[in-house]
Image (tube, rainbow, N blue to C red; front, side):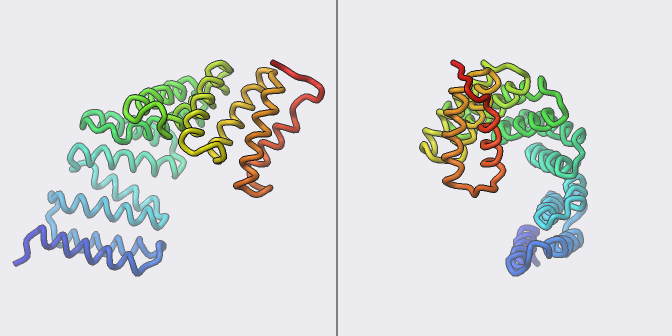
Length: 268
């Protein structure tokens, strides 16, 4: 007689075998077959069934079947142990965001943060804070966005170090939001920090370096420091053109900003 562990191993092996020979759009049916078998094999209160429901949700998400994936994750959530509940809540938040349900996404991101904190697992804290900040920014709540980005920056610096790429992302996000709020000094400081990290991490010629240079140029443009703005726009454009085509949105945006600089004027 096979044990539960053996049954689970066989079920997962067959599932992975089916996936390897299938196209992504076929994952939904494979997930349904996998889950139907799991429901027959495991009891309703079995942790293995919860795992199977989550795995089926992941497969449906990979197939672009977001509503079914969401239903799976929500079904698995109530009986999930703490760390699994945190992970599922984060997945639910991301799907709500993808489906355009911003309020539900924001609520679930906040719950996921709280659950990860309760589980003493900081591994996704920076990512979740950045996601929350982006949602708040899209909703026009710049103050809340800045708060989340600032917390993401503090967390990334403490956990990963001052020169980590995740720290640069948080600094960049806070810089963009500070610019939108009219706080040019903080925006400049944040983009300078992101630029230094990215140059140290990727070297002088990299699209993320160009992004920071372009963001700094926008700040100097708004401050009336047109000479500085021009230098950074040109530097960003040189890098972007090395990696992107002329029709790339980033190239077009930098060119348009460069061309909008006042002619014959300069600033500090």
